[in-house]
Image (cartoon, rainbow, N blue to C red; front, side, top):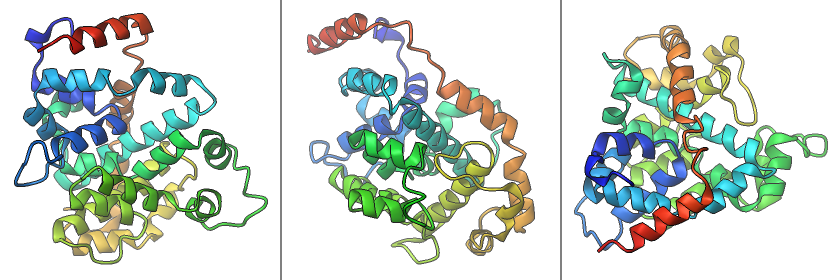
Amino acid sequence: MNQPEKMEVGPVSEMVQRDPIVVARLLHIVNSAYYGLRHTIGSADRAVVMLGPLAVSGIVLGMHMLKLRTILDGPAGACFHRLIRHSIATAFLTRHLVEGTPRENTRKSASARIGLPFTAGLLHDFGKIILVYNYQKDAVGLYDENAFDKQVAAIDDRELEQLLFGCDHTEAGEFAARKLHFPDVLVSVIRHHHDPFGTAESPEADRLIRAAAAANLVAKAMGYAFSRTEKVNELIQHPIWNLLIATGLPRHGTPEAAIEDLLHQQEDLDQYVKHLTSNAFDSIDDDELRRSAEIWKMRP
């Protein structure tokens, strides 16, 4: 914000992808009736292009960031941070399944490759973000402390979410995503990533749902689980791999080769998640944020 003349799409896009909530807000804004676009925008980098990097930076500052910082420092902080790490890891692996490995270093090429597959993976657990944000105490009890496991023998967290919140995270995410005017393909990923065996409204949605579902499983096995982990040696047993190959993803031809290729990305993935979740703004105090926000409000 102090050097607006140096703001460019690439660096701002890289900043934006640090937080699924920011991506969701930008998609809501750019797809609103105000812009009157013929086609919905489904990726963070396109949203930055349409809105302009300076405007995006101002939006980020105005997004209740101080409130989010308070949450991250509170009892739900560890839970929220782990959810963000899981979301970024799933985004990285979803993009890898769909697009393969970039030729350049991951960090250098990140801002140029924040497309729809990355956004789909980043927002697949959008509903969990909403539940953690709004029901911090109950969410921590469910996701962090497994406080309800002894009372209810649930197959997965969605059953417990139904009992505790009245809806599971896929339903909460779908509801919020539609309210925010997300593109239909992203709404489908948010709603169906735990049930990828049906047919969505388009072949593109089917591919992204299945890629995100597979990436979600592998991310849990690679150390980026949110609440329930997966075992590496049991990944091959999941039917998602044959379904992926039947729809042309991945390019490896066999489930074994696909899983091995994803697991081979561990080092790059670790560096990528560390880079995007580093405390780059810890040195900026609240007064500085407020001053920056006031400066933004005075702009024409």
